Image (cartoon, rainbow, N blue to C red):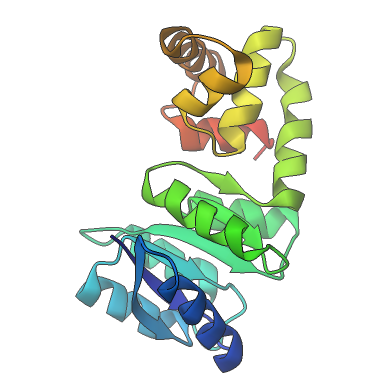
Length: 201
């Protein structure tokens, strides 16, 4: 069961998210709060698997809240759900520890799928950020093979190795080798950093 802490300062939207999670068989609400300071405190107390978090919050900025949660003993996977869609904000949120970034226009199934992805260790970019992630691969064409660029784009889109193998009709071992080569060529330590580099962040 994926335990989710919802953070949004709009009561109706917060209640709507909580209601959406209750209809999913594999998720439950840990709490729903309206500001980042309370979120940081409740995150330390409840140790949720995922924090679904807005950035435009009263008091402590959302990005600072993410940074503090990422530094906790049992850090959650933070999935940003916001109206803000500029590169600087996306970069700031991801660089302090967020594992995903969705816009509030996302449909219910996209949000639920993203929660499952970040809970499993993946990374997620919504349609706007994802499109930029895919276009960002172009700047690495000189270093990456065509296949490695395809793999990087799918990593940036939050796909697992198994999903990439199915989509590209490759063996799991081949995908693992491509991912390893991508990490080496981009000089990054993990998939999240590779996804950031794919976006030029």
